[in-house]
Length: 322
Length: 288
Image (cartoon, rainbow over all chains, first blue to last red; front, side, top):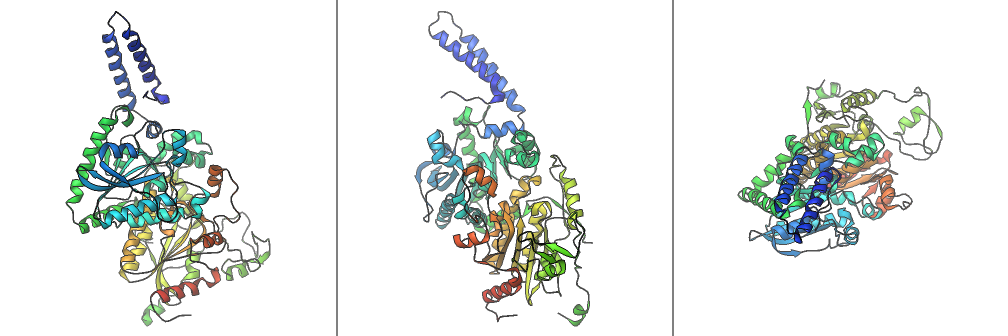
């Protein structure tokens, strides 16, 4: 599949086009231009490295939404075996914006849950662009409680612009569904590992992201409001999104510095989609490491450290009352 | 309570909210719903509910606590917790300036006031949102005061009540604010472990990150009449679905019909209803 390049990667795109042309020429050419090709390939890699070394928060936001970025299903097939998808919330519907089921991770049973976006137009609509309705969150909770019952660790993948702001979603209690998940995940008696793989869109992301380890991919974002939404409120125009992205502090490295996430998982040069296999290998190791640490803890220890971690969130000062 | 404590003045003196409207505080007030011209003092005596049309006007946090709690034995919790501008957030205004300006106009230093006290002699801890403080938005201070309030409830075996009036999470503290949703709900699990009641009272408006965290986790969820309550704002929904919203959408009455809340309570009956529900939950004799 041909790589889709973002606006700020146009210089790389031009080089890659040139390389493509040369390869085409070489096929029926007597002159050997492979040296030239490998030279250009090197140059393209260097250029990508340079661009990615100084991405702005807004550019990272665009990488996090890259149409070829690996989604939850890609991680499921890349990291797990024997996936048995489980459907529905048992009350209203099966929300395709959140998928989940049983699987094996390094031979051991786990419950995998994640937001799922679509690849083509038809699938995007079916999956509502990864924006869950209440039944999606209730399905996620049902699977988590099932995992708890059978003492199976929960692994979640977060990638959503946000919970869906629709009429039906409100009628069926979007707020209650999200709040309930926060309440239950804070006390779920099994290890919970959460990874932001793309967009961590506000409450819709948090509703499956309360756990013992919360990690972010290097070029993912996690925010209280989308940069566009923030810009619309503050500057009355979505065009200031890049300023908003800067102000909100939504990148993995910034959030790690602020102590709001536990780990940054490095991505291949040019982002996860440029080398999905390398991405899978890094992710597999990262989850395996976390799981090993968490499985060594007793349930009480696990819940206590999860609770303490949640209580640490927030920055304020204390002054003696007047 | 000892006779000595009864003689002492309450620890917390009620602050009068500075008048922020352009019109000087007068004798008269016009109802924003039915345009009836009312005596200001009549409105106040009627708990800011219009005697003509029953419209429930907004109530500042401290006034709300004054309305709800018995006069004696009130203690403020968490007032030592103060906001900081951790992100050095700046758009067209600096967040730090906004904090100062909101403090000046509301007389509060953040969007929540928490007090221990009693309602018709039933001991409680009550948290109330100050909507006029940056839209009652929940940032680190609101989250921490909420937590400290619940902790006092747990230590003293008391029910916890939260009166919500909020636009949602506070943007200017970034992800810290989002995490307050998880933090507040985590402390509520401890309250639940001790089988202490959590009553959530939703008032106009309860939206976004506050609605989608503890607002619906109440053992009993009450709402004032006509309050706007929901996850996404009506304008955002309208722009997303490109449909006209149904009549009364996201109002208390709509939520009651959809099964999202237990009851709608007129503000003038609130003290009695809260006391009734709490004594019933605790298997105690009725109070009035």
